[in-house]
Amino acid sequence: MATIDEPGIQTFARRSEPLIEPSFFEPLFKRWKRRVALSENDKAALRSLPWTVKRYPREAYLAREGEPTKICMVLLEGFALRQKLVSDGSRQIISFHIPGDFLDIQNCMLEVADHNVQSLGRSVVAAVPKEALGALMAENAGIRRAIWLDSLIDSAIFREWVVNVGRRDARGRIAHLLCELAARLRAAGLCSGPTCDFPMTQEQIADATGLTAVHTNRTLQSLRKDGLISLSLNKLTILDWDKLAEEGDFNERYLHHSA
Image 1 (cartoon, rainbow, N blue to C red):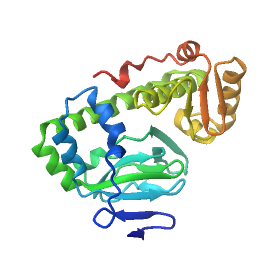
Image 2: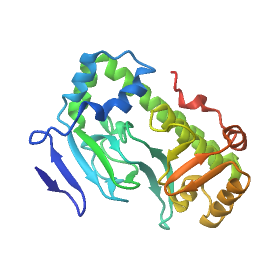
Image 3: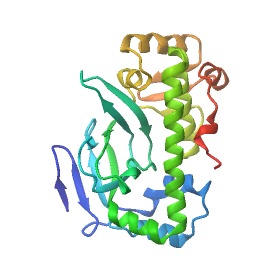
């Protein structure tokens, strides 16, 4: 049975509908497999938690800064972003997320959300009470290590974003962001060849790179003109990976795909 939490948001209780299909967690398990040897029992234990499925419309808030933390969420479908707002109403996007990502794993330990999580387009998440996930982590060393590594790699990505906004020029910032997203989608098996899903608007790219919308538009046009990328219909095609990576000073070491 579905219930409506807020306008446009549907929640499906697991007890009434078996919506957590084994395949939903495959992007998460694929990423973890590169770092931790999880058994089938480990995977079954994670799937057996009291998950609920939440479907969010475009730009809906999945978590709000200042609210008590009660759940942890895994993104199953769609894209999401984390953001901070400042007193004048402007925002800084601090990360983008793809299917298989935990969106708020820090909530296992923290009592209050310190930033917002927002859906990019339509998205589907699996939410679990943080106490249930914490108990599983206490009992299961493999799951605990996998989630710990996820948290550390999140921190590595945040460090790289600080460098990107603080030390690269506009062209470098945007090139680096595009390379990162393509590399993460490819590693998750969500991108084949040079073309990937890319639902971000120019405004969102600007807010992620600390640029104005006008400067972002000019920079994207220059990358297109130089034959490095193509952007159309929510798709990104990287036409020259080597040159784009050079422009963005991109080295995917910080993503720890083989950690």
